[in-house]
Amino acid sequence: MAEFRMPSLGADMEAGTLVEWLVKPGDWVKRGDIVAVVETQKGAIEIESFQTGQVEQVLVNLHSKVPVGTPLALIRTEGEPSRLTPLPIAPAAPISIPRAVTPRSAPVALGTPPGVRASPAARRLALENSIDLTTIVGTGPAGAITYADVERLASAAPVGKKKPSAWLNLDAMRTAIGAAMARSKREIPHYYLEHQVDVSLCEQWLVEKNAKLPPDSRLLIAAVWIKSVALAARRFPAFNGFYHDNKFEPAPAVHVGVAIAIRGGGLAAPALHDADQLSLSDLMSRMRDLVQRTRAGRIRSSEISDATITVSGLGERGVETLYGVIYPPQVAIVGFGKTAERPWVVDGAIGPRSVVNVTLCGDHRVSDGHAGALFLAEIGKLLQDPDKL
Amino acid sequence: MTEVDIRKVLHEELNNIAPEVDMSTVDPTAELREALDIDSMDFLNLITAIHHRLGIDIPEIDYPKLATLDKAIAYIGSKLQANKK
Image (cartoon, rainbow over all chains, first blue to last red; front, side):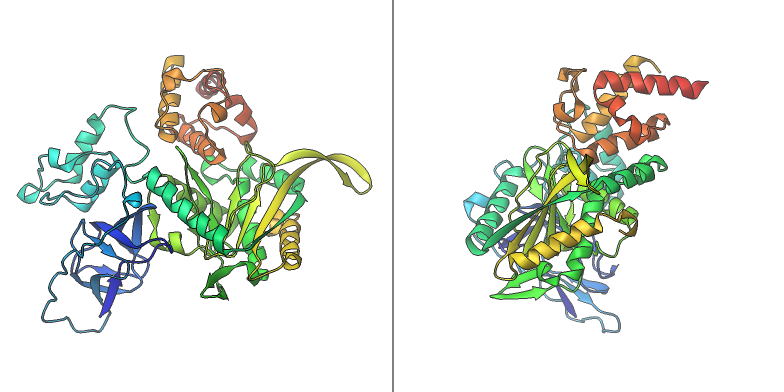
């Protein structure tokens, strides 16, 4: 029997509130399936199962705030006999949470209020539209609220009043960013390097490629940046991994944390898994999905804790150079400024070229400027041959 | 589709990206990216949404022609006109 526990989604997380179960006893789950939604400082996180098996029992009730590590459910792996005597449901262990991390303005409907019967899909739709489920009369079995019940109300809601998301709490997010960045500046001896890269070929290549594609399939230059960093990180393992307990552990896979700005002043850097293995078009569609979900406040647990290196770009309206702050326990962050047209010497003649400043912030406990320079140079080289990315 | 209809579609799609903005207060001659603080991903999502909703093709090379609300309305209007022919 495997225990499905409240995961730690960052060093600063002490507890999480279970706000939605997406499975019930008897359901089969695969590794990677989303089984629950947990409300944390970083917003609502979709929690994935690490096990394949059948949900035997749910141990924690909705709306319980429980410490990291608390078993939430029991999952019976294949071949295991069913447990005969059910365990008692654990009481919601009350724990004290510092006032500072408590959301100041509670979103309207955080999960289902106790005593309300509603389908998971209905609950989700209600949350997305900030609809209070207690105000709905259900038409489903035993008066349960169905998706259609919520949909009727959602479509009747006045347009323009829609909030970005009921899940995002920017105050709490700011506290989490502050805690992570303060820890980074306290613990990580950063060093900074900058490299100017002629990306004219990349830009040209992208224009030609996108000219033949419908909008759904078009690529953004950010996808090219991420792929080049992912490939370089594979070749330079000292920039890809985690620093734990006074020791660096290089990561076997490259999961690139993508820095995503959130309207109203928020920032998250969820992981784009195995970015080095993805084709550019797959990487692009995954990035689109990731950005959309992050901005809607629906990040998955693995995405929030898995990133092995971060890439940050301020886009074409930003500044030319970006000096990042490493997201612990990672050991490197690569920054891309906006691309600018510059006079550039190519084959002995000066001409206009598109140039981008690429920066690296590295962790001196793990690497030095020498290795960092080689790593940045590798990214520059990869960007000269976009066809091979 | 009249200019009023196109404006309505644009307002709706832009509100999907920037829900907190009251579109009636946006200067129709201002650069959308600046006025609404939208990035390249938002802009691509806008183009994708218009493409699907109105069935017009907007090549990347034409993006500057949709830089402001007024420009975008004129561009979409001419594209719809061309589609009819």
